[in-house]
Length: 388
Ligand SMILES: Cc1ncc(COP(=O)(O)O)c(C=O)c1O
Image 1 (tube, rainbow, N blue to C red):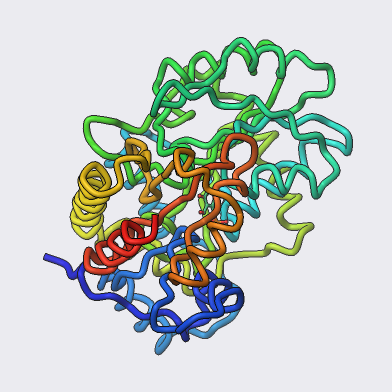
Image 2: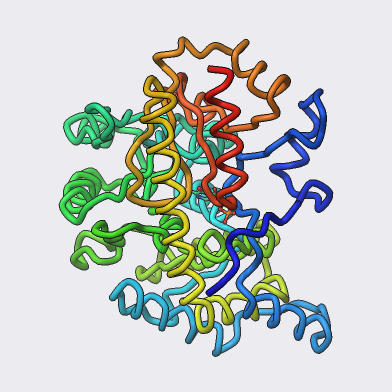
């Protein structure tokens, strides 16, 4: 049994989530709860702490690259947890998935090219496209009640545009918590293959999936459909080691892989953070039981939030959670305005991730991070019920 009920106070740890909240918040600091960015305020998996502590004593903090043990750990994890047999040569590491997406944009598209994203979606997807002067082509997700679907007809139209070169896919999809099915992926791949559109499949949340849902990787597709793709995976969300900045981008096509690696290199990425390698090994080889308990904790937290709102806040729409520890909440029935958001924060210390940052369709939503001890979430929900 691991401890998921101790609240790790990260207010003074330089945590981005807490620092941003502190800068905008004007109230009593003890009341502030930062529930925004996707990392956890739980104790770390012990094997990772031990590995980093040991490395701190033993290693020289010089340039580091993935070791054989690191590759073996990644390959074994993909096989054990995802029934995906990958080869060592397919793995291209990067200092995170946002970096990988940026390398892919630079390597495989030109200024003015179109890149498809499916909003509402993780902000760096569309921000990176715009920052590199590429065109954002939004294939907006379609909402049927509390379930989002992909609009395949519109996807075909987007992919058929002459300038469209890439689709950045989020699977599982942050912030709406969906796991795309094999059939969804087959349709996406058929469309993108027909129109020669590369797929960058961000699968950072692939280990945080709740039964009976299962993650299907883009890499599970038949060879002819997966050839023009990059699959981005990482131990960072799964094991709360985002600050160590590592991702494993799985690229079977050697031409794409070499160009990706060259761009990463040109952008100054020469190897792994020297603690990321040992932490990744400890995560994949020794922390699986921690993950299984974590998944149960998140399911319980989701249920607690759903049950609470049914009773106390029936107008608040809590979306089903197939994957991720990020709860999508619709405040539309409250005519939730910017002013109300300010009130939520400044008078009540509740700092969610505002839905509008995820682009079109996120305007009436807030995203709640569920990776907190129950006592913290309970207190937040009670406070919310008092003020709404
Ligand atoms: C879908 C998605 N991709 C990427 C990231 C960040 O990845 P990294 O820290 O590896 O750049 C996040 C973080 O929340 C995310 O939700």
